[in-house]
Length: 438
Image 1 (cartoon, rainbow, N blue to C red):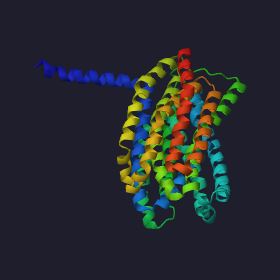
Image 2 (spheres, one colour; image 1 turned 120 degrees about the vertical axis):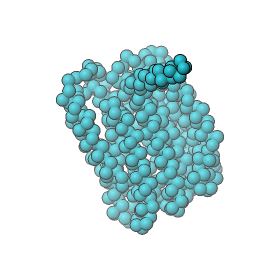
Image 3 (cartoon, rainbow, N blue to C red; image 1 turned 180 degrees about the vertical axis):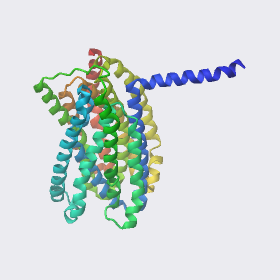
Image 4 (cartoon, rainbow, N blue to C red; image 1 turned 135 degrees about the horizontal axis):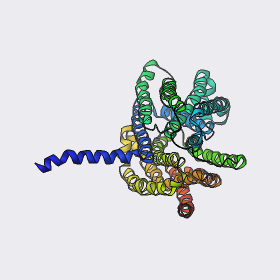
């Protein structure tokens, strides 16, 4: 009887321990971001599997290139505000946060409209694979608008994480991902050209306004009226040093984004749309996997930015609890690579398995680079971020151009592995030294 009676008490103790664990913002933020990334990746897998079944490989390759270009262009036009929000919004008084967030949305949305317009005007003359944009003005207009919507949608994640509402993210992103899947057959039934792309961007029109209205009413407005719960963190307000950091950080950010678009462009230019479909699907899966650890470092920055003196302790937690799990998980993905590609069809499994294994092998090295960048950002040191990302970009692109001819799409994946491995080896001693200096 005593054993039975002790079970409820043991259960309550475990529940209290779980609540105490999740009370640490680092863990709650990391788990929410990882759950959001994992669910989005899983539903993204379903999305591309359905697209591969419903549409031709040429249509998948063409619309995949369009989607990748949109996300990359949007990321550039965000002006690195995602990282800036996570790093510096905690230092803004609650009464001014809504205005600062709105200003960030407005500036980045305007940049997105200008960037999207330039893209649809210039890209058809640069790449023959994108000439269809000049022949379809309606699609070009949709593209420009969707770049702006995606920009705000992406910045919402930074705002929610920084304001300690990361548990909203899985619901937001699952709704978006599920709606995309539902719209795929609907677009096909309607006979819409580029149905994959249109189904992918259409849910943004509803989700972006809803999330921001809820954010203002339930978070920003109440916090502005309430007394200050904790002292605001201090930051270096030397304008010249801050501008140098932001410029270098933005440059590194742009270099980190470029491979997502330029590597598929290398494939398309040398091997065609169908080959890009077989390359883009594994790349999408691996980049989604890499976002898991990126979410952890985002939570690290958001938490440490409020209590900078805890940076070393928080980084040790990230290294021991999260980074240590990444290597065996990446190995498991490499082992079951053919099975992961089966839902897309036998052709994707046949052509994409080697690509997936090479790309996932680079993920542990990529995690080292990302963690190094997070610590540099917390210390407002932009030059190391710029140099590491520029080196990764230059080596990966140069080797991709050299390898794509003799090795095909596997050569492009090998270029990504070599570039990240080399840079990770170079920054690892600096990362260890940085941790010791905290």
